[in-house]
Amino acid sequence: MAFLQRKREPKTEGTGLVLFQEVQQAMHAEKVLKAASHAVRLVAPPPELRKGCDLAVEVNLTEQPAIERLLRERDVAYISVEPLRIGTAPLLDVVKVTDFGQWVMVRAGNMKITYDKGSGIIVNVSGGGCPDIPYLYAQLVDRPLGDALRPTEIGFTLCALNLERALTECLALHTRGNNS
Amino acid sequence: MMLIAGTVPVEGMPLTMGKALDQGDTIVIGDQRIPCTQGTAAMISAALVTTTYLGLDAPLGLVIGDIGDGKGSRELYRYLIDNVARLLPKVLALHYWLPDMQQTRDLCRAVDKCSRRPVMIADAASMYSAKAARLASAFDIFTPDATEIAFLADAEATHPAYVARHLFETDVTQAPELARTAYRNGNSAKLLLVKGSVDYIIRDGEVLAKVEEPDVPALEAIGGTGDTITGLVAALSYCGLEPHEAAIIAAKANRVAGQFARATPATRVWQIIHQFPGVFRGHLCSWSGVCCTKGENHD
Image (cartoon, rainbow over all chains, first blue to last red; front, side, top):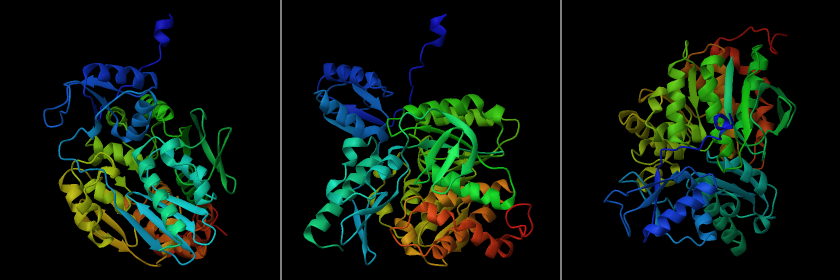
């Protein structure tokens, strides 16, 4: 009765759309994403979001960085990834810097990196809520800024994207010797 | 029983459930050793030192490895959906996982079928998915930070990375207004503990209390100090305090623990957690009236 033990295909209620110029690109993307265990489905984009063709792939928006990375790696052309809810604000790009004397904390959206001004070593990562963040914490903390793995290369989620922005700003500040 | 569920950053770690044990900078669940760093481990660890102090049974940890690809998260959702009615926790605290609206809906339906409804607490991405699925009001307690209260106030955002700029750029003193907006839109749990330079305890959109002393700014930089607050809230709710009482004491205890640890931005969260027994010995009786237990404080 092997069919009874068939692995359940992940189902999702999507929060984002990948938009394409051509229908074939959308169908190819769906195959590529499903093969990588992303919970996706082909849908018709609402008129307000439509760009290009009238077929899109509904995705979990939280996974936007992982989905875009995979499509790039597999040479699947797409126009953009958009939040499904009409009226959603654009991706937040606010960066704030807090000077703690010996340390600097850089906050990008919901993510924060703190490093030692003298050594450039990352001493803490805080904020966020997605499952790659504790993993990225383990990969980044105690490493010099310049040797740190890039969050968008090893992370999967929008929290990782914000962490990448924080790291980029930390590197720029430390390189300039302008730590505040 | 108090059940704390979430992912941990141990690649390939199978779904594991068991009473948590404290081993310094590590917690042990079943046969798995998990570093006590930012995330679910910090939350479980904070809850554990609290239950130990109070002489209560240790939290039951339900954890699985997930480094962000969501595979562990999906298995965790599925296990909870299938088993929450059987496990019947008194407190169910949900933490890091890949936010998924459909699975969150299924989980809330499963909780509705429990013969006794647990106190439902969500932090991190379990809070994101509850809000995105428009199920926030099914939860008793959310513990957002300053960014996350802006996220709850933004009617359309499904992740804090997509929060409207004008909401994100408000300072912490505007947290009560953001909380009212979230409540009006149905995007708030019954009680919010907003964590920041000032902590606000807000019920049904109205401020009940704010906690701002001692001021330990370094706590914001230390990964996991928000998770510890949620662990404290869970454990104090489990011991029978009302949610708002648990939230006020948790906010105070976290700050005093930071002070006891002489926290700097380079301090690690387990160093904060290990201050909690001393904080409780010094303050819990006066804060809460919990003055005599069969736990560690019974000298």
